[in-house]
Length: 157
Image (cartoon, rainbow, N blue to C red; front, side, top):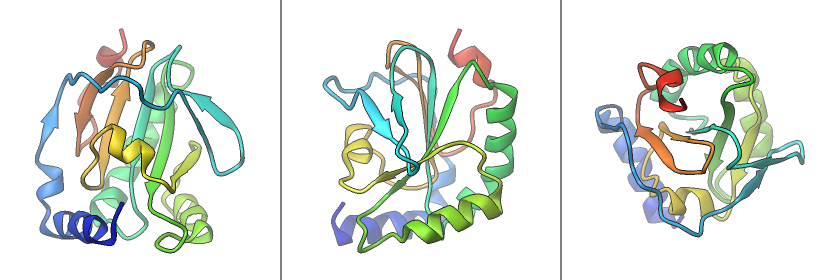
């Protein structure tokens, strides 16, 4: 993500426009990443079971407000949906220690992934945070929105 795009993401978050749009079903572009590695070095498949990718930033007020609801959904859907936090940005723009600290403070009890090269963000056309992408077991996008879905379970049946 270029610095200009990062600034655009920050501006969208500040204006609150990031919390108004949801798309229940969206066809993801083919050829995307098959696995991601979390900050602890553990690889996670993006197919084979439902996955929720929760794109966020440490400075994002909307992300902080949604954190308790997303964390509760992760607990309710444990074993059914793999939740992964995704923090986009290069090492120059994002501090891993801050990500870990904020994730603890906000109670994000699911693995965190650093999207340093913006491969995930670009593949799923993420333009602001928070953005939640729910993939079905086949890796297809079943939900894309800036707020948590009303019924997580219905997305992965």
